[in-house]
Image 1 (cartoon, rainbow, N blue to C red):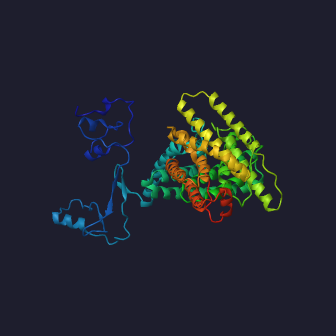
Image 2 (cartoon, rainbow, N blue to C red):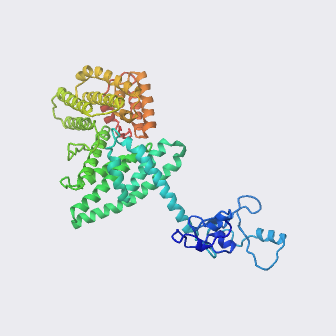
Image 3 (spheres, one colour):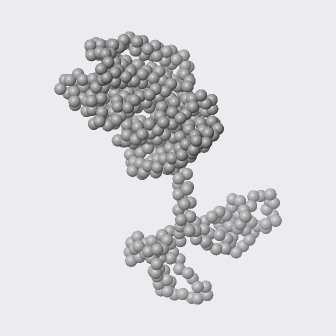
Length: 519
């Protein structure tokens, strides 16, 4: 089939709005069939299609006599005037008089009749926009597959970082930027080969987030003065609070960063303005309250100078499969009680001894309740259930040891903690040998508590350092590096055989020790 009559083609076929470039060059009428014209196909020619065609116009030489000089890619030809080979070569080698200011790489867009050069700035913006879209898609995918699982105690279909935060991030530019920055921060830790570029991406996204967040906060303050409708006010506040929570977690991924404290303070301030009685957005409100509880519980361990506040959840039902919520609440209550007793002691008040059976009974009831929940939940993964129960036991023994370290007398502590530490050590050994990655990232707090009682045991110190290092590499939470450094300082300070409590050591050296959060 060599010649094609246009009237022989189907009238209802899809046609393009312009001729293909090959038919234009051959000066024949194109049939404009999509995706390729039939006249090109019938002759075995490659039909270039009907879209835009880019080619680079000119560039800057990188070597030779023309190094750093801009030259035309193709010299202008005066039609009808013959030209020798030497003249052609001379024209190609001719320099521009404005070398320094000439554009480096200007693409041309081929149209039906002529070539129009786009402005360099427009081309850069076009490329940047597509690059950003591709990068954002990669970051969202990384957040969905890698980061969300690390931010929840137990990953699963109810993980609120996927079911609640990601959909809201698609509607909120502020939260979207902070979520992307959170993913970039995590990638910079787990992908060391691209660390420099990913750190810069995280910084750019963080700065952009802070600009958007600043405008949101100004808008929120104006709405507060104008007393706008409660639904709008609650939605904006939720976006602000969730954005600051994402910023807080992002800084916990960055090595040697303590900015998580600043963002956590912002979360508290936003929470103080939030009306818990508002019935709208109740599920996501419950989620950020739980996140605030977690951050305060594990961030308050190394805090002694500032007052601790406790926020009760608006619902007793967690937004995800969180089996450790009760232990987190007990951990915070122990910390608040210890700070309260210490402040009272410093003011000269006489304190009665703490009845440790109350705390032991409370933690045991929580442990039994959670075990019953795990047993009653149908699961096809027996390995996961065994690993989950092991983590649960480790958290239980860690909280028991912490309660004695914080509230018991020296005599009670010396009697009660050794058998608890043995049980905690055995559970940590079992956890680290059990092949369940979905729960292994919850080892940090039990490992820290074991470390605070291992100042006289070199072998345990080596094991704890190794497990902390492996955990940081696996989860990306670089904030635990400060936890490990605190343990090293404490071990060195008590190497001579001192039995000083780590809480008192941290209190006495609060100004010198970098603040840390066990996460």
